[in-house]
Length: 209
Image 1 (cartoon, helix red, strand yellow):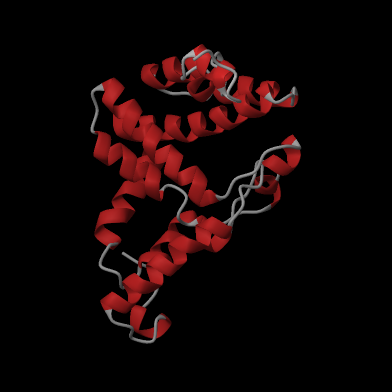
Image 2 (spheres, helix red, strand yellow):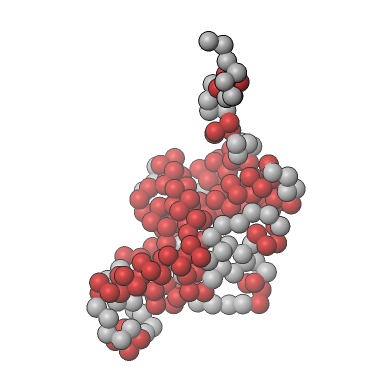
């Protein structure tokens, strides 16, 4: 049940127009920065970037855990959608600022016809009663851990301290195992070690014919 009358607040816009509104609003996540990096001192990303990889991680974790990959990925995809309206509050911000994330999401969804599909995903994630919800929460943390590992590899020693805290938040066996592997994998290995070693030697034509 939503808190606003769509006819009053949305000027009676039809469903397809509201879907267009919703998609424009989704684009705002590209312009909404994740605010914690200002304290870390290096690194940056926006909420859309975070949500995309979190959804991929959620899918992977669910496959590892024998859970529902699609449901997990969808929870991840929409988990921060409300930030298009309220922004991203970091841990310091939250000491002084409060907001109702669900109401923000309700207002974003009003009149789209998606309310009964998306809001239950948000509620399930918040309640964390299902394995998929717990995997989605772990996916959120693992995306952060991936970023922190990259910053640590690049020389920000504080990223290691942050990563220690993030590793303790994991709630599932699959999440903990993947996160530990991330923490011990160089972030460049996937591309630097991928080609045959001779490729790097041949790069400037330095190869035997």
